[in-house]
Every structure is written in C-alpha cells, then in structure tokens.
Image (cartoon, rainbow, N blue to C red; front, side):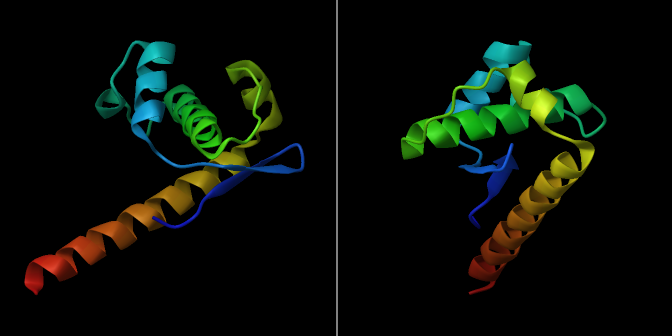
Length: 103
C-alpha cells in the first residue's frame, strides 16, 4: 500500500488501515468497519481518526488528539484527499492482485 499521510495543524501523521484501526472503529462507533457506508461522514471521519491513531501507535509517533480535536482540525478537503488516496491504494492493490491471478 502506498504511504499515506494526513496533515493536521501543519504536522504530518502516518495513516493506514490496520486491524487496530478496525478495532478502534468498533469501540468508537459500536459498528464493524464492514457496516460503514460512504454516505456517513461521521463514520468516515471516525475511521480516518482510527487509522491515524493506529498507524501512529505502530510507528511510535506521538499523537494525543481526541476524536473531537481531530475532527475540529480537519476540513472537508482533507477528508476528500484522504478518501481519494485510500481509493487509489485500494485500486492499485486490486490491480496487482488481478495481475497475480492471471500469471
């Protein structure tokens, strides 16, 4: 997966989906990640937060914002950029997997 970073208040933080992010999402929302829809801005913002918290924990990067502090620091353009990056990463992974199947 391509390296994805999120810039918050001028600082860059790693961001990637992990098992920890999925567990954090369940803890925050009470829903499994598979129940998330692209129509729920709240779910998308929460999942982004969980991906950042989890990637920072894994990479030993200090990140101490709460979900609300994180949401206050984001704007819609940040969310759209992240969603586009995640979509590109997903499409690239799908294409690579398809290429492996054909081999």
